[in-house]
Length: 210
Image 1 (cartoon, one colour):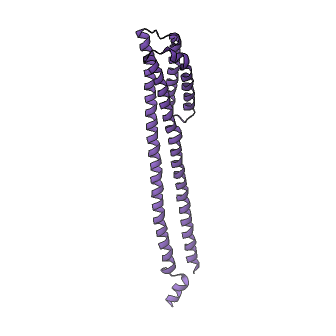
Image 2 (tube, rainbow, N blue to C red; image 1 turned 90 degrees about the horizontal axis):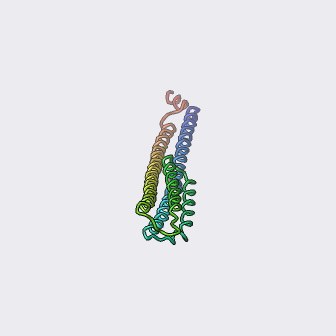
Image 3 (cartoon, rainbow, N blue to C red; image 1 turned 30 degrees about the vertical axis):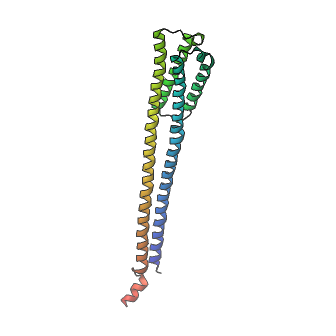
């Protein structure tokens, strides 16, 4: 093999190596992006959905007690319900929040504190003797909290779709790179065969001239 052919061989192999290295690194980044998206969808979206449903269920228990005018609920159960609300809110805050999500969670948390204050003000554990206006105020507080939870749930759906779309783009990029890599490898292979079997080296060309 002539020196020129050897140099062309080396250059060709270096180009193949560099191309595989670049596409491999890109695929690794895309894979990490997909993995991160899946983890966030589970940890910061599906888990939070569970928090939201738990919060809604706890508020619903308060609503049932208010509708039934059950003062024993406030004697035996309400303190535990309030403690669970506070704990779930703390766990909610520990997840990765968007700025709007954090704002809505702050609003919900403040609403819970205001509801507790109203319950304490009305001394519901001593008896459920509320006026119509007081009953409406209590009902409006819980209804407002449910609306905040609906907004938070909407954020989870929106962020989950965004993450799925992002991971879909990453998978598409990985697929495209893989196809391009195969085509480039075929082209390089054809060029190397051309160099070996078609393009004559200096020695061969000199012999042909004689």
